[in-house]
Image (cartoon, rainbow, N blue to C red; front, side, top):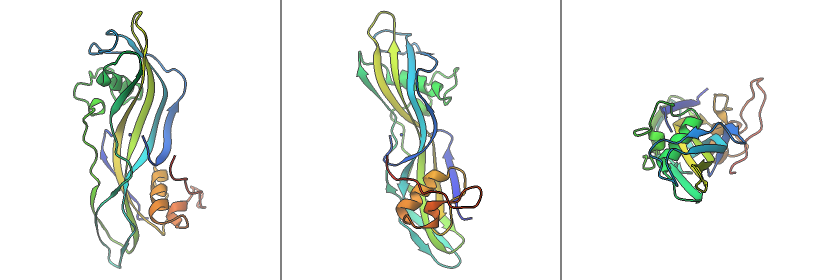
Length: 229
């Protein structure tokens, strides 16, 4: 099996290509108290989150590369599919504090601990540097290879209330993991996080490639994912 998953960081959003949803929460979750830096209608209000979602999203992909017997180097800049971003949009009410909203979302999904004030946490940094799409990898066998990159995207809608002030509503987006992988078009995908690998195969290898169809745990073929959406 030539598929290789490489996790590049422990902390890594909106999707051109949607991966498998890792977790989805509908309805109001536990309220999260805002920190003292909140600059909305007033300080020390409460965030309530809903439509919280985490999913894997392809960020870049290479063209199919044919490598002969003995293997060789895959040195390429991946074609960008989606640029991760960290941002907060305030849709209604006074403008709030983006960093405080991201800190609250980070706590909501377990990315930021309750003791962390978020001052230096990557997840709350709206100027966070995006992952590189430059890849230098060597494969040891022959075949048609595809190199790809992905992130785990986090999104959520919020309602911020404080005293008798009008509520502030908005949407926050960030990312928690970035990673990459290599697949060979003739080999079904069976590794963990296989859905985004299958999407990469569908785009670069074609819908008839075994990698795009994958293989179930029982050994039979599985349905290829739909691209987009």
